[in-house]
Each structure stands twice: as structure tokens, then as C-alpha cells.
Length: 336
Image (cartoon, rainbow, N blue to C red; front, side, top):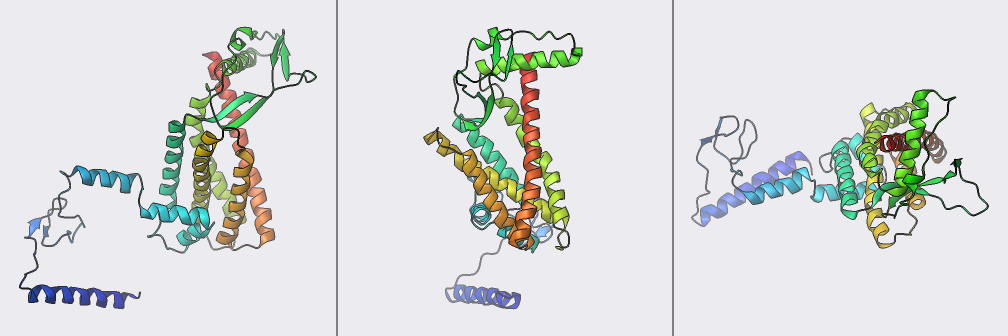
């Protein structure tokens, strides 16, 4: 509603209220002027006209502190629900609202990203599932192991997302041999030796890399944000968008991935054998295509080409980071 009508409505409502109280013989209660606890200015109404702080003292209210924690810090309010619904059900509309300046009704991209990431890792911790787990792929009798040394066989590995805990091989750690390769430089020989011992430790304790993934995967996701933002800006030239607009789209994309992962946790707990990786990848791909088309106002051919290039580079960088985390984690576990 236009501003003048809104103001007139407010004046009319105030006049009606004032008339009604006068007819009932009731004088409207006005708080006595008092200094503002924040800035010291004299305040004669509910809020300070200088700094905006309320005159009501919440410092002794436990209920108010709990309400503030839930609503303002955990973002558990109708605004968050409205924002997440728009993000997940209407791809790209939330980013368009941010770009066009319609921001008061929704949670900001950065706060929404922080909320979704914290909510995901909290849900993961409560579920007892492994974020990412290395598991050996079972070979038939005719297949050959990936690596064999002095009778010790290394099997091919698979990376399982949201995996239930799995029993380990208690004899694996004792069976691993030491690497003695005179042709290798000493640092490389030591690194390979630690990798092999870390691999054996992982076979004994399959969840041993969880702490590393939990600590470093969020950092890896944050490190990928600048790359995604710059790629989006490169392919979005001529759209009249600022760099922060591309960052908002990248944040919304990662938030969508976190929210899907949160929804996948109870599915994995109820149906441990249910496939999750490919269905989630298909949903993310479809959401990204629809969102990119809505945000950048691009045709389907341009959308598919640009999302294909940006997505390939992004996923490639993510896998390189995951492999580096696995190697670094195994080396550290094996060296400990």
C-alpha cells in the first residue's frame, strides 16, 4: 500500500483509539520521561528517538532471553521458514528478490548460509552418521587388488555419503608392511609409509577420518565460494549485476545443498541402504538450472552451457579438495 495511505490509516487508527478511550473515560497511559539506558537521552515514549532502544528492561526476563536466542540467533522464526520455502520451492526467486532490493522479508544470504551449515552439522552429530566414509569395494576372486606389497593387499576404495557406522578389520593394522624403497626420496618414502599405515588404521576404525572431514569440509566449502562467485561473474557479464549479487547466488546454492543433506539424514537413518548420492545430485542439478535461468534471465541453451562449465569446474575443485583431505588425513593418522 502506498505510503500516504498507510500513514493516513495509522493516523485514523490512532484517532479512533483515542476517541474510544475518551468516551470510556480512560486516559491513555503515557510513560513518564526517563533517561535512555543506552544513550542517556530523555525518552517519553516506548522507544528512544535517538538510538531506537526499547524502554522495557528485558535483563531480568529468562523467557525473553530464550525467545531472543531462538528467534534472533538460531533464526527459528517465520522469516526463516518463508526464506527457506522460497529458496527450495522456487529456484532463483530468492536471489532475484535480493538483487532487486526486496530484502526485509527474507534472511540475508550469508546468515542463511551460516544457519544451514550449523543446522546440518548439528543434525549430523545427533544422527551418529559419518559425513563421508571410505569403504573398501568387495572384489571377486578373479579381480586383482589395486596394490600389493609383501602379501599385503590394498583394495579399491569408495567414498560413501552419510554412511552408518561400519565394523572394521581388526587384523588390518598389524598386517600392513613398512615401505622400504631405496629409489624414493626420504620424505616421499615416509609419506607413502604413513599413507599405508593410515589406510590400515582406517580399515580397523572406519570412522577415523570423520573428525578431519567435519573440521575441514566446511572450510573447503567456504574456500570454493570465491571461485564460484568469480565464475558466475565471468559468465554473467553484461547482466548489470554486481559481484555481491553473484556471491548471493553462490551462497544460496550451497545453502540448498546443505538443506538437501539435512533432509537426507532421516532417510539414511530409516533406510540405510537407500541410494542418496545420485538422487541428490540430480535434484541439485535441476535446481541449479532453474535458479540460474531465473537469476540471469538466460535462455535454456545458454543456461545449460554455462551451468555445465561452471558446475564441472566447481565439482572438479571439490573432488580435488576431498582427495587432498583423504590423503592428508590418512598420512596424519598413519603418522600418529
